[in-house]
Length: 344
Image 1 (cartoon, rainbow, N blue to C red):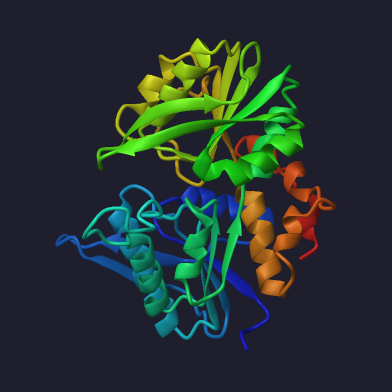
Image 2: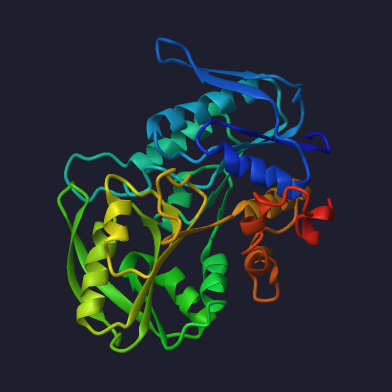
C-alpha cells in the first residue's frame, strides 16, 4: 500500500501545465532532473525520496514527440526503481493516437505499441484527455482514465451568448460533439470527409445539416495542420454560415497552420493547454483555456480512491466552474484556487 501522500513530477514537454496543476492542488512540483547528454541520450534522476508514494508524472507526448515519449518511459523506469508505490502517467495529449488501426496493408498500430511500452516501463495507470478514439483505452492492460474538455469548451462558448448556434463535427468525433451540442442546446451538423493517402490531406465530401444563416461552432479533438478545419470553414462559408468558431482540445498547430488560421474567415479558435502554444501565436485569434484544474481534481480523486467519472455527471458543475480559472492564474499568483481544491 502506497503512503498517504502524493507527489507530482514533470518532464520537459509541458512543464508550465504541471506547475499550474500543482498550484491548483496547493503543492510543490517534485524535483527531478530530465535532460539530454551530448550524445542525445536522455537522463533522468529523481532528487527526492518517493518510496511508497503515489506518484503522478505529467508529460504530454507532444512535439518533439519521440523525445517526449522516451522521457516519459525513462521517468517511469526511474520512479519504479526508486520504489514509488504507484506510478500514474499523466498524458494530457496521447501521441500516435491516429495510428489506432490497420487501415492499409503492412502498417503498424503504433497507438497500441505506445500503450505496451508504457505498461512494460512500469506505469500502474494512465490519466489522459480526449483520445483520438476512445477504443485506445482497450490497448492497455492497466486502468485508463480519459478526461474530456467538452464541458470546459462548451461553457466558454455558452458564456459568449452567441445567436443561432449550430455545432459542426466530423463523424469520428460525433459522439462527444453530440454532448457538446446538448449542453449548448444547439443542432448538430456533420462534416463528411475522407483522408487522402498519408500526407495529412483530406477531401471534404459533404456537410449534413442546416448551417445557412447560423453561427457555426466546429468541435474536434485536435487541430494539426488545419487542412481539414479550413476545408470545413470554406464549405460553411459557401453554405451561408454568418460566423465560424473552432473548438479543439489539442492545439498541435503543425507547419504553417497558425498563419493559415490567421488569414482565414474564422472568428476565433479555442484550444486547451494540453500542448504548449507556440510563442509566436496570435493571441487575438487563438484562445487557450487551462485544463490544469480538471487534471488537478482528477489527480486528487485518483489518490483518494474517489470517482473520476463523477466530474462529468449532470449533477457536478465543478468542471464548468473551472473554465476561467486559468485566465487569472498567471497574472495573479496570490489568488486562491477554487475552493474544491482546498478540501485536500
